[in-house]
Amino acid sequence: MAIMDIVKEGEPVLRQKAQPVTRVTKKIRRLIKDMMETMYAADGVGLAAPQVGIPQRIIVVDIGDGPIALINPEIDESSGQEIDVEGCLSIPGVFGYVERAAHVVVAGLNEAGKATRIVADDLLARALQHEIDHLEGVLFIDRAIEVAAEESGE
Ligand code: NI
Image (cartoon, rainbow, N blue to C red; front, top):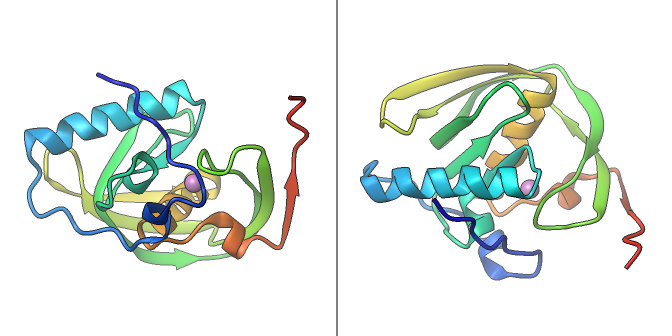
């Protein structure tokens, strides 16, 4: 496994619409493993493939309940709304309040290429919506009601 470089805001790949994965190959499974490793190393709760420079529709999320990988994820159902703070590994040191659906059902393929559905609330729902936004070239700062930079101390 390998830790990948995380692309930062300003790189065009973050503003591109990512392409669907047509076949879940060994290469895709290896990419998912590397994305997980990269997310954990950066202390993040989610990562989308464009954030490692790959414009394909793949996300990984772990809010502390175990890893989830989704290929070609689609939001099937969403309801409720919640405003909470978000950050992004591609925009270090910046946080903002974003309104998201409180409950979502996301359909996609797992790393084995099997159709799967994730029913999510609150933080997991938020993380999934944030990562799926990345696949459309949307960043949380586009949706944030209020954005603040944290003092880096550097
Ligand atoms: Ni992000």
